[in-house]
Length: 453
Image (cartoon, rainbow, N blue to C red):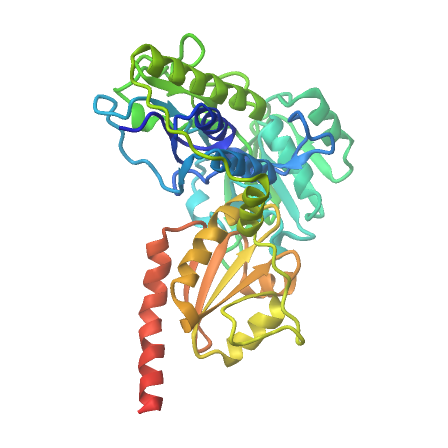
């Protein structure tokens, strides 16, 4: 049996993995996939200005990349997979739960209709879409998440409306001051969102609002609507197995211990008060040390010494995952290569390639894009020279993104002989990408055989 299994990533899961790995426990970490992007909520955060050690600040995805590299360097076995079932009665020697929390939905009547067509739970992922640039946008919420998203969206929108249901914002004083001082943000207090309405193209065109004092309803024309209304704990896996409170948060005692012996909790899945990256990391440390002590006191600990990777090797793996490749030009473009970047390559391959053509639309601040890139690279590599693949940065090539109707990243489009055969938004399983490619790769092989014959 494994010494320690860490379920989840983010600051809590990665820190727990680092401490457990350095204690020679050889932890196994399931980072999450569809139920939560590897790296947690920080993968959808722009500047992190209050994490010690980064005086100039650092982006959330960059911070998570570094933590992941450090965990891997010390010997953590990382699996980018979801855990769908846990039986704590037949278990590894110890378990650390670091499944975090998920952004809440507003559940207005037309939410499903306009999801990814104007409504989003991630301004950092989707705000850079060309369809939002120069437009009026809205954010709902009054806490730090909502105020941060409103400030971020001022980089792209003409004006941002912050919709606060209560009589005052709940954000920190510093964030409130920044929002109130910004000339391109209007704060609407005592304002509830009743519904959204669309245009003739099926895209969201505005919101129906209600004044919580007078009861009066009015329309607010906006092209984008972003949620910043808090989170729900990802604890459903452990219902009826360990003690949860009335809101679904794991109940902890003595720092990290749960009601089940050998099961420990870390991060936002139990934190009902602080919910900070630094406190999540601290609780990850506590959970790992608690697990080590539990194993030792019960004579269950089996030390597995592993030689740490060099910092250079770990850093180079992180750079590869981030996808640092220069865009193709007329001078550098080589049609015999499989992977390309930028609009020049896309235009050439769209018109000239006889292979399946995959296009990944991404943006620099998109955390899920970083998680998806190495996975897609593995899929593409498995086909050799049977396909072409192009990465499009929607900030570097906004006209391409606008023509494609990109309203959120990541998105992968597949083409064959100038026909778009599939659009896949968000992060999918490898098998789903392979299924699309396989449906047309066989045609390419067949055509090649016919020509040869």
